[in-house]
Image (cartoon, rainbow, N blue to C red; front, side, top):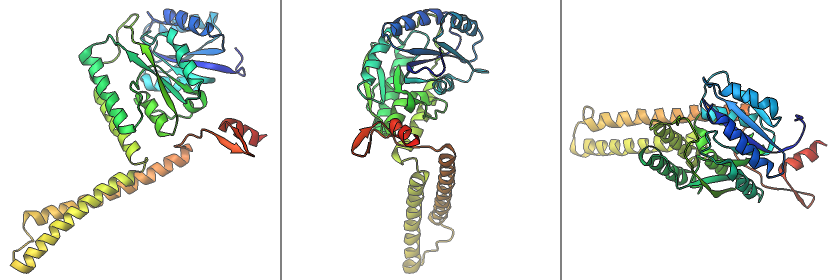
Length: 333
């Protein structure tokens, strides 16, 4: 397949020790995409597997020109593998799915059909999940509820099968764990999102790489999502408010102590409220300083990475509407 050939669909699938699933996944996803009669590529990201997963990917790539194998130097985790796959994709649409067949390949066409309506992201909402109630389903419901509450994005299942517009997907700078937040991130950028129901079959083979400990990481991701969504990625807004609250409380205590000193002659220098107000003043200064430091770091990061925290839906030029990427191409020509 020529590197210059236009691709409509890129399938990005991270794989870690999935030797029992690779061949079946390849057979079923290929059948599903060939039935759509469109151009596609299969990006299989080997995330430092210690079994025969990389050898199987190499073997399949010799007979299927649609396969692009990405081999990470060592195991870096699902999000990093997804990010590496996205950055090496060329498709107009990028589908992110697991390789253990808990995301059914036969349901990918329904996501493509939905995103062709003009959405920036389509998520697959898993129905009738068969995983452990205590270890998987309850933590997932709680996490999805908290992510909806903190971000405002109403996607009910943010961590499953998803499809994004390719140019948007390749702009995302994902950090470890943020693959679970992709719908909320796209929503916060101003992107349009939708959700279609999908099934949730058990793993085809092997064992899950997830445990209850992942819920702790998800909690921290949600806190960061709340921080970014609530304060427009401006640390000074959060730390400045905390600083102002502490300063105001310390000032009220100090005014009360001065009132008692002036009108009742009560000594204030060694009283616990006086020492507490001093501590609050120092804490207020610390929070404000932290806000300034984080603000400077955020400005530097955005300048270096040329980050854009918005998504342009349409550009009007000379009375005509066109897609942003087409407008930029016209300007260059």
